[in-house]
Amino acid sequence: MVQLGGVSDVAVIDTLAPGIDLAPLADLLATESCVKVFHAARQDLEIFLHLFDVLPRSIFDTQVAAMVGGYGDQVGYDTLVNAITGASIDKTHRFSDWAARPLSKAQIAYAAADVTHLRDVYLALHDELEKQNRLHWADAELAVLNDPATFRPDPRRQWERLKARTNNRRMLGVLREVAAWRELEAQALNIPRQRLIRDESLLEIAAVRPQDTDALSRVRGVSRGFAEGKAAPGLLAAIQTGLVLPEKDLPRPPRKSEGAKPSAALVALLKVVLAASCEANRVAPKLVATSEDLDSLALGETDSPVLKGWRRAVFGEDALALLRGDIQLAVEGRSVRLIRNDQA
Picture 1 (cartoon, helix red, strand yellow):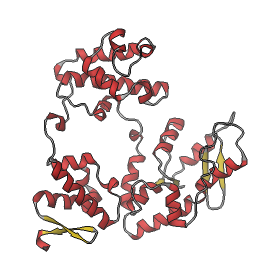
Picture 2 (tube, helix red, strand yellow):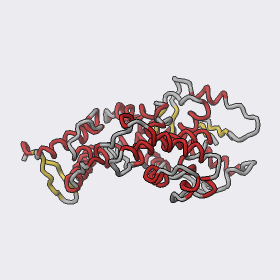
Picture 3 (cartoon, rainbow, N blue to C red):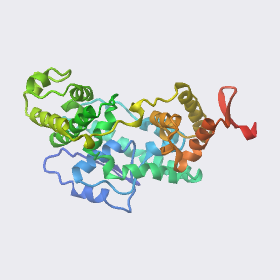
Picture 4 (cartoon, rainbow, N blue to C red):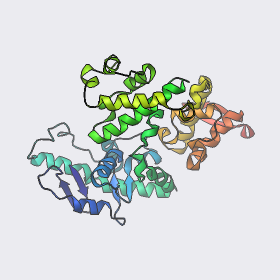
């Protein structure tokens, strides 16, 4: 189901309708001069990329804009609509059977209501960010959603997101191969990677390195049916590839797994500074820094996203001041204020 809302008209497209031609929709999404407004766009964009092999042009994500504008972390659409327009979204048909056909008039009306207020929300947020001189902040975040690579991750780097706690490069080599195999196999089958085989099972496979069906079936989370199924030979081949890789071609452990652990107390202080900085600037903390960013700062790493662009102005400079010992934390009422030593 695709809902489209313009200045005065709303249209609902049933993408499951037999024989439907979606080419006009693809043309509209590719039109540079027409801004396409989404809320929490990532999943929708991934679907359109898969369907049309190209991303929509000129997009605006109201959830991202709301985070930049100080409406909180990952604010929901109904909450945002109410905050900006005062309207309430009818949730009556949210859990109705959307696979059944034909759709009822009530379902179609409910679907249309999803975009009825979207234009007003977009105009309000765009105006707010322009007045705050933050449109370029939102543009920087939306650039990630305009990049096809965001939705087509490199299979050879999927092992990194599994966060294996080991210095064993052979294990990491096997993990890289099996994670790449899973990514490509899941894409070919058009299913979520976790449905094919879970992260925990891949980590155990990389550790024990089964080389036949029986050994594979003894891995936690791997059923006998899977081990004897069509996908297993490809997985076993990936394990073998990892086992015979030359030493020089094996991946190296990420820095943090080599024994460097950030001070928990320092990370906690950075979280306080992050919260205080974001509160002062009215921007969502989740948009500014992740827990991984805070860990890297605590470890003294300088190649961090929070030390670049608008994030540096909002939080990065305060974080560096904390690490240098040039900042104090003061509790005032129910809030925390940051005081530079030269201002104390």
